[in-house]
Length: 263
Image 1 (spheres, rainbow, N blue to C red):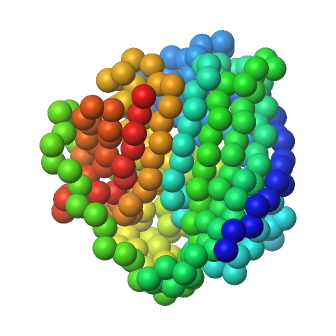
Image 2: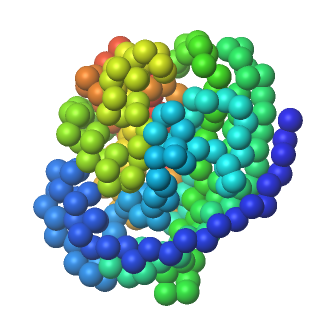
């Protein structure tokens, strides 16, 4: 079933320079951004916070659904996919405005139970000009949903980079994005309530690392799309792979955790 929603909300943010520098440091870079510098792709993820008091949070630490994101009666939330169109750079320390619109709500019956998909479009303007359009696809599942069998990742990459994740990086990324989802820092919750094999690496963090790899290969990004296909645990070593405009994350057992396309 498809429900079309045109609910929108607009939020502004000063794009604080120190926050961008903190993300540089968290990702292992020298924090050398200055006011007015173009930020690397995906840095906007650490802005436009939606701070809510504890009473407005769900059991997973995220803001509860409603009134903006509809309540589908499915408690487990994941960021499933995203797509970005880069129109012009976003600059550090320069106020920006983001309009978020619910584009579509879809309910499906999957093999493992009911699923809900919510697509949100973000239009980000700076100095009155559209700089970035981003689509986010969130998926909601019922408790007790059995994980699907993940696809096997390709092994024909032309470039590869091994990455590891410690709990400090997961904590810092959660803090910088104001993401309170407990699967990233509360191992007991992640295992006992959501059924994971440990702490889960943020999907957007994996997308960010693939975007960084794509930018190194292409020089400039005009578009980037990605889809999460299996969770990656914090204790696992992953491989970031690239070939001919496609990038993917391969887990240590060969499973594909994320697939992306860049141009």
